Image (cartoon, rainbow, N blue to C red; front, side):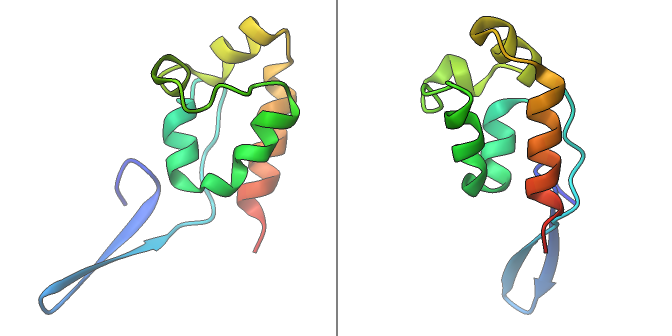
Length: 88
C-alpha cells in the first residue's frame, strides 16, 4: 500500500491503483492526504465549516489543527470520516 492507503497492482505494462476502503484516520491525519484518498469526503469537512479545503495551508494541516482553528471537536470529525471510509 502507498501512503494514501491505495493498494498497487502491477499488470504487464500498466500500474493499476485500487482503493483500500479501510483507512486509519486519526486526529494526526493530514487533511490533504485524507482528501486525496477519496475526495467524496469533502462534504464532511464543509458541513463542519471548513470551507478552505483547497488552500495550501489547509491541505497541510492535521485534523486536530483544523478543528482547533474552527472550534470543532476533532474526535467527532474523525468518527464521521471513519464512517465514510468504512462504507462499502
